[in-house]
Length: 411
Image (cartoon, rainbow, N blue to C red; front, side):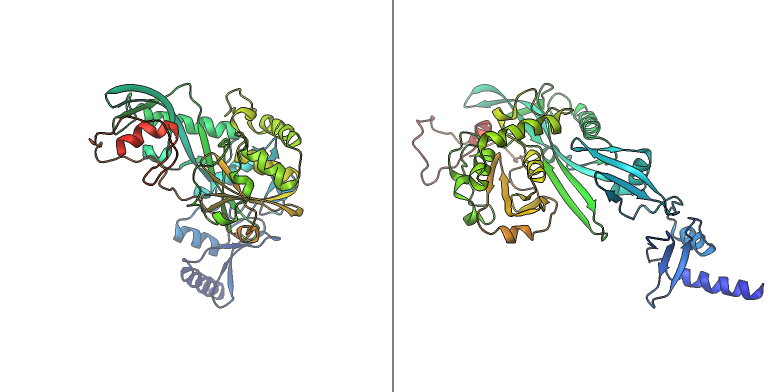
């Protein structure tokens, strides 16, 4: 008995010296070990999931919760379109199934992501549809537009991963509308413009999703649901590696920049690509119609549609948003690679430098200066009457048509 107590005391002393260490799960046996710097270890839980006396002491001392069923730090086991939770007793239970471009979650899957804490959430950036009332040169005007979440001081919002995409969007809208309701009729005043929520307008979302790889590393992927329809770009010099853009990026595509560039770079008939995109619109947006009943052919395909199209055709795909790699896919047809940069509502495909882009790391997009800010005070400078457009000249600047009133106020 004395020897046992002495041995247990030595184990406890060792555990007390390892309170700053994180336990490690042994994949096959399911045991939970606490490893020391001298290559020794203490067993915190056996293969049956039950804590040892050392394990009970470590969790009691650290105040951390122990899940006897599974280790939430272990990645899901993927088998085709299905992913499984690895339980400590060696069994596996279905967590989620990838179907119709969305994940369907089981109870085991919901419990798994709930146990992961912050890692069990996705971050959403979003644009809120708004009505805008303003005054320019003594004249009142009304227009429609959208406000990014950062302009509302709401930033990225965390949404539980273990829900379908329609459920996530409904959950997000509910949270955002609760916040908007607190602000009254006007949710933002900028210069001489007042912004209010447009109940019939379309929302758009950008998903920042953390994925845990098999080696335990975490990557962040953003998928954008923004229609891309710019016929010919207005500005691109600030984008990375602009010298390596394919010439088709600058050709007039009659507001069909994605299909136009894919067809010419890959040697594929445009009609075939459009038919594929018709099916993708139905598959990806059947339950959350961001197109509001209109065909993508009228307003352009999204980056999600482009990436999914590449996946289905086994083309490697690398998408940048400004200077950030937001999404990537390595296909079997490595001789056909789609590398592109998204800016505004235009797609810039790369002709050169694709190998460099393929080696970039996916990361959270950094918010740039295109986000609407709050000026200290409106300008009182008198502007001359508008004259007929005669082309760009030194000193000119450009803006999208829905930004013109605000731009003139600033200048």
